[in-house]
Length: 367
Ligand code: NAD
Image 1 (cartoon, rainbow, N blue to C red):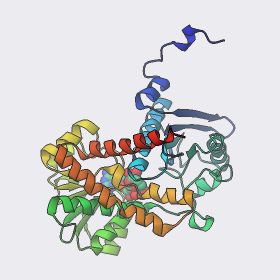
Image 2 (image 1 turned 90 degrees about the vertical axis):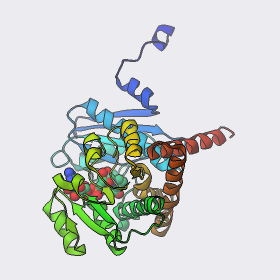
Image 3 (image 1 turned 45 degrees about the horizontal axis):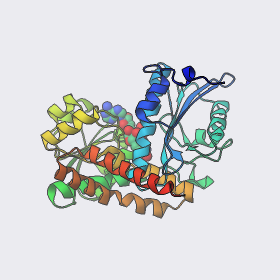
Image 4 (image 1 turned 30 degrees about the vertical axis):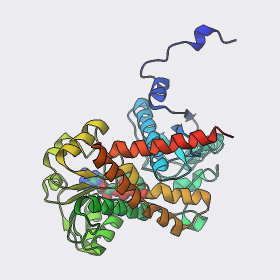
């Protein structure tokens, strides 16, 4: 029997439940399997628009608190990304605690797949940092709630080219706002990080006649883009001082911060990296003060999730690209609204996403 004392027991400050409440998550599942060594957390943030979808990240987190923080933050981000992209998907994400180079095994991935399956479709998984297509194929042995399978297995394959196309669309929309034309011809664009997404972004930019410079911490990545597109190279430590019109962060998060904003002299920031603003409130306002137009990361890097959604409803690459192209219109709407309201574009985009979630919640309650 539950007595009132149990029901009203306080939630531990900074404990998992308190964090879930603060970030408004629906469900968080802790997964443990000693035989395979699996330790994972699946976070379902919001399923108003549909099943939650978001990749699984494998990372050697220092402790479970760090892993929990990451999965809560990332899954919340997925809710807004899918909502603003017009997808019928909620936000979710999973993390596996461990070193992807040492701790992965078929058993671990399949056991993880069983945990995903136990949620009955409320969470659909895919690749993220540390998880390859091969790993996802193991997960797929245990659950059908999966996206990101190779094309040979009826999936959408690598989402990076689609993500890059969306970033390119978002960048063009920002150019339209700033320069009155969306042509990037002759614009000096610096692409930070030329991995999966950065490479394809450089391809679009060069094709349009932009003056591109690239930066990466790995020589082989630099060599690939320089060989293919003859672009200039900037050392990672010099990037924020480099003269440019457009900064495209395609490597890490939190690169828009006090230090970088004191140096950057660009007019536009538009890139693929997740969580670019170190502090959502402070740096969103700082961008306005500096007169830099910011294309919100979760809006313009949504091509990957759009590609995954296409897989869920029956893969059609053309349709995925068509939906990704809409990022242009939405970005322009966000930037126009932000300018009109003198608000940060990031917040305006969040409000738009929330508005759609609320509107859909209202019509659902009619059934
Ligand atoms: P990736 O790992 O393939 O590429 C990232 C590149 O950044 C690597 O080449 C790496 O060497 C480089 N890098 C790391 N630190 C750097 C630094 N300090 N300076 C310069 N370069 C540095 O990753 P990706 O798939 O291309 O994704 C890039 C970003 O976009 C990530 O933040 C990712 O979360 C985000 N994103 C990717 C997708 C997708 O479809 N792949 C979708 C949405 C968001």
